[in-house]
Image 1 (tube, one colour):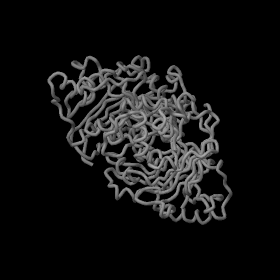
Image 2 (cartoon, rainbow over the protein chains, first blue to last red; image 1 turned 90 degrees about the horizontal axis):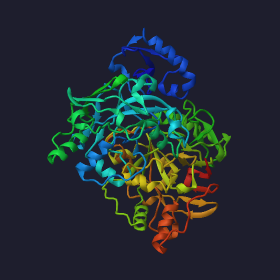
Image 3 (spheres, helix red, strand yellow; image 1 turned 90 degrees about the vertical axis):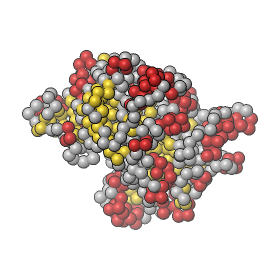
Image 4 (cartoon, each protein chain N blue to C red; image 1 turned 120 degrees about the vertical axis):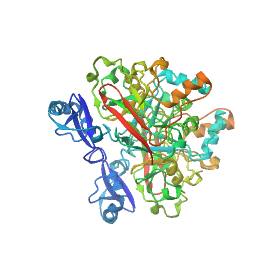
Amino acid sequence: MRLATLKRGGRDGTLVAVSRDSSRVAEVAGYATLQSALDDWGAAQSSLKAAVEAAEAGGAAALGDFAAPLPRAWQWLDGSAFPTHGDLMQTAFNLPPIETAKPLMYQGMSHRFIAPADDVPLPSEADGIDFEGEFGVVTGDVPMGVSAAEALGHIRLVMLINDWSLRTLAPAEMKTGFGWVQAKPACSAAPFAVTPDELGEAWADGRVCLPLTVEVDGEWFGHPNGRAMAYGFHELVAHAAATRDLPAGTIIGSGTVSNAEHAEVGSTCISERRAIEMIAGGKPETGFLRFGTRVRMQAGPFGAIDQRVVKR
Amino acid sequence: MRLATLKRGGRDGTLVAVSRDSSRVAEVAGYATLQSALDDWGAAQSSLKAAVEAAEAGGAAALGDFAAPLPRAWQWLDGSAFPTHGDLMQTAFNLPPIETAKPLMYQGMSHRFIAPADDVPLPSEADGIDFEGEFGVVTGDVPMGVSAAEALGHIRLVMLINDWSLRTLAPAEMKTGFGWVQAKPACSAAPFAVTPDELGEAWADGRVCLPLTVEVDGEWFGHPNGRAMAYGFHELVAHAAATRDLPAGTIIGSGTVSNAEHAEVGSTCISERRAIEMIAGGKPETGFLRFGTRVRMQAGPFGAIDQRVVKR
């Protein structure tokens, strides 16, 4: 099933199920918000299924009507599970490889996910404004110490996310070892959060085996496939839950989708394309974003993120 | 005024005002939770003041009745603003100094703050279980780009926090540059969140000028003063808000309270005491915590955190 959140209602919007052709929606009896359904997932199933049926003859909805599936979430933990991305960055910037036998992960701001067609307000072009195309999963309640195999059963929904990044600020924060605060403002999300079964064979080994297409001002930027994760989402969930319970509605990100075949499939962030340019020609060619630029991301059944970066 | 949250009610507990002698409480008309009052702070003032009056003749409450002031929060950003702590760790472990002209800060888990007298469940003694005594502030809604001077006016409440830390896991996570996930499980909080004016002269230059006393199984461990921050809380709030709005109920931490006079005043975490032992005698003497150990923290008007570490 595909679920979404309309902007109307309170800070958490209004939960709806979405028709197969994405044009119609229906509210969910007894569950005003996606968070409330995630808190009570088993009991909510019959209401959710009824709403999916009703959506086929439901009210019309356009991209601008949707908020992020979770306009705010209790937790956002973002991985960096595509090894090609890390390898390219290390080669281009002559960085030592990150030594760890575990998945890479940081905790990011989760109190706001920007609606898929809303403007993205940021303070300064000088901060090196960049996008990162990612897949993400939404968990149910996950107990501390869960195994990766068990974690697979706690994945409720899959999402498409743009993890906005400020590249000028990032290296200094990373060097402190404390992770990123200023370099990682609010993320954006595509409108439709889908259950893993909805992906069919494209959900395999805890990975979203679909191309993620990025366009910048209407020009193709990349379409690498989510299959190439070194760790599946179930392993990322288990890593996140090693010393903490995860509350229902936790969002876990894949990190920038990146493939070894980047010469053919491109990238999902400017920083990686710049790294490829540096390796090939000694210097980056592609600039970071200017205010007014439009970034569009799309993948499988998730709908589009289609936004303009604007001065705050 | 002093505010607290009783465990009864939903996941966010029940907001109460607290009597001057800390033994009595009264609910707040129209504001069931602290988050709801923070969302509507100006309008809530008359109800809060009436509840403070009513608390003097209110119902009795003991430490075990209280949840953390915010049992869950939308955002927890923890600083490391006491330079002595960083200096000691770098000297003991022969680390290069962290080069940054900005405050150090990471984003930690905020979906659970443990109640002040509840047990603290953790998976393994082998993880190097440690406490960190900190002061923290709770903000109202803070706009992106706020100045430090303006930020002072957005500080609503001051808290006492124990930032539990798993030292065996921390260095590897720090080395990735991504910050801590597994090394930073849920924090605990003292019961009473107080408005800055309640601190009188102990609230100066955005700092809590009070000793923070730590006891481990009834033995004194340290009582350094919160005055010695290199950055005031207003500067930490401005740092946090450089590229994001902060929602009401954001908690910003000071980092481990630490003083240059550590020979007299001790420390507020085991890791720092071990660093002092290593510098003095070549090796650490004090072990990390065992299950069953009791850690008590207390400062000014915040009440006590008094908890046992237990196996999950």
